[in-house]
Amino acid sequence: MPNSAALLEMPDDATGLAAALAQGVLSADRALSLARARAEACADLGALCWLAEADPAVAQGGPFAGVPLLVKDLGGPFAGIPMRAGSAALARKKGVADSDLAARFRAAGFRPFGATTVPEFGLSLSTEPAVGPICRNPLNPALSAGGSSGGSAAAVAAGIVPLAHATDAGGSIRVPAAACGLVGLKPSRGAIPGGPGFGNHLGGIATEFAVTRSIRDAQALWPCLTGHARGPFPDPAQLPTEESLSIGLVTGGPVTGGPEIATERAEAIEAAAKALEAIGHRIVEIDAKALEPIRKTSARIFDRIISANLATLVRAGLNPEHFEPLTRAFAERGAALSAVDLWQATEAGAGASHALWQLFESCDVLLTPMLSTAPPPLGSFPTDHAEPETQLARMDALAPYAALANITGAPALTLPFGAHDGLPLPVQLISPMGGDLRLLALGAALEAERRWTHPISLFGPPFGGNA
Image (tube, rainbow, N blue to C red; front, side, top):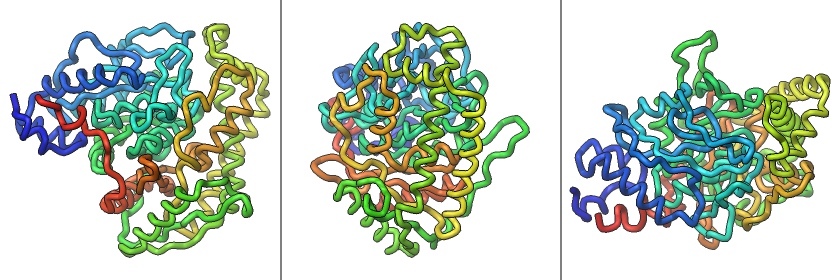
């Protein structure tokens, strides 16, 4: 068994843990034991909704061999991990087979041992399902951990695991990452395999990846999960990561038609722009008004797709009487949509994608706020009402530049760049399709500024406790 001094010297992310495992600093079983112990110590956070009784097999290879993994309770199935999407309408039944993505996580060496909490069917930017548990932010338990990958983000921020599986259909990777001081990449449409059997892709707006404690973890995970092993469609070609890019700094507020952003968050965006300019990138100002039509169109399309998807679940046999009131209202909204409504939404999505592409003629990457305010208090996204418009307005107010990346298929990255009152100040970078590695390179440059330090170490402070 390793001594405490050796553990204390270990890095605080999945890449560092994988290296420690490979070097024999600790065993894979010890790493899983530490993750389980940390999960039990953090049970009141509500990050986990299910924990395996038996330890999963140890992977024999892969760059992350032996690293413990938690899986979001929504997304492509993992064999042996029961999922119910945070809903009383679904029984918690174990998956019988891996999705393509789950198989790739395992091939990379991860050991999935539990599932993380989600709001019902991911329909909220806070993770407070009626079936429980309520997920709290490890940085301040009175605040939301974000949603819908809130359980994954809380688990990573609390030091239970160094990274966790996550999905994003309207900011669901990025909002929790932003709330908890983590790195969250929403990949380009088509970059991550989606089949077979994952029925929640929502017309192409949803994708899967992870929330991580470092940019280098996201960079190392990328080649493990991307690339189609078969099929007629090529992967999105990756854009080059030039040393000098044009960064479009989104400026403006209510006067110019953009969303209202808290002062300290707007200042963090400007500070990030200055940091990128200092290493050779060019800054051009993009008035928020230029993005407003794309934002509004994206919000409308998101509404149509989410509503239609929930109506489809009812037609597939789920009992809406077991839904939360808000979910049931969205499903009824979807059932009332016509084919013309959905066709118009499809056309509008293509138009939004084209408009964003045109905007990228004036810059290579957009730099925007991720959250307009600090993570809100628990209870700010209630689901015990039947008012979809109210829910959508609350989501748009908190994360105004989230859904446009999903609707257009563009990759988007959030990471913390500073702190205010002990909470992270997240920024967001958005690129044209295929700019995922470009975003990660820019994120690495910002992370190198060391404006944010994780207040909670992996497996608890200090690393490994007194192992």
